[in-house]
Length: 115
Length: 112
View 1 (cartoon, rainbow over the protein chains, first blue to last red):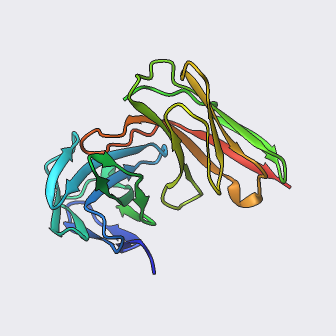
View 2 (spheres, one colour):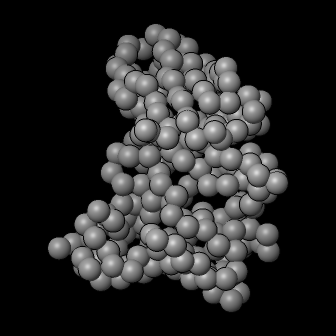
């Protein structure tokens, strides 16, 4: 079974559209993340949720809105897509135990192409 | 989180040990050294982490200098499947949010 899964794997859409990417983890972790990897291959964190509460919100346009319906899911909704949003988006999860934040497990990525 | 410096690329012969250096001269006493790797088009994969002592697991060994200003990740017997970008990251183990700050990493090419 896949530990961290993302759908879709590929997403091609027109500028101005609204799209969502879904992420699910079956590891029982309490923290989930969204990272963006641009064309230059730099990985940057966007958001982090712990027990459905937003704890990290980097400088990300308001067009990006994460939603965590439960601890096992973290979805990313993007409004009014722009060319610069084209990237690979990775979801990740990890566990906090006794105040210690353990290693992150990453999903396979969603390659978003905005035309 | 402390900044890290890694060589942009290195080659390694299959079956030989690969030694990947990382400089983190501004690391503080509570920061751990983490290594992740990203195989082409896949999500990053955790490899190992350590604070002061050398660490070993089934994937690799981590050697941290006594002053903790640098470290080396060792892949003992590199295989073609170890071709990837390797990231050295330093962070507080108890930092709220667990943000990983990825740099450019080292692109390792294992050659037959």
